[in-house]
Length: 73
Picture 1 (cartoon, one colour):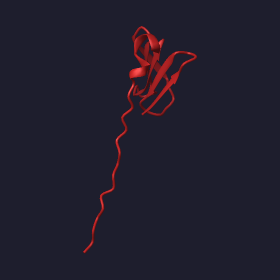
Picture 2 (picture 1 turned 180 degrees about the horizontal axis):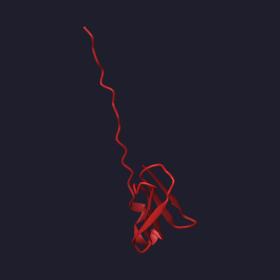
Picture 3 (picture 1 turned 90 degrees about the horizontal axis):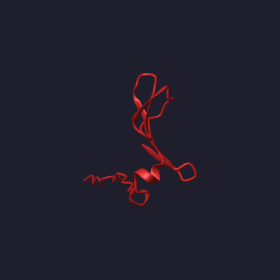
Picture 4 (picture 1 turned 180 degrees about the vertical axis):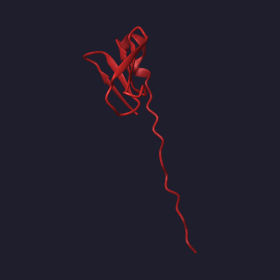
């Protein structure tokens, strides 16, 4: 998943999957779900994002993979 924000356009895009958008659904005013040719969700686009969400409060949580040490006796 990728999250992009354009301050100039005030648009936040949450990319869920890679692909070429073929259709879209207005979930509510200013919130658009883009779909691929099989109607799978690709991204959510939020217009006028600074009016809808507090950009200061966005937290990014990334899981950390830790390799376990294996001791061979």
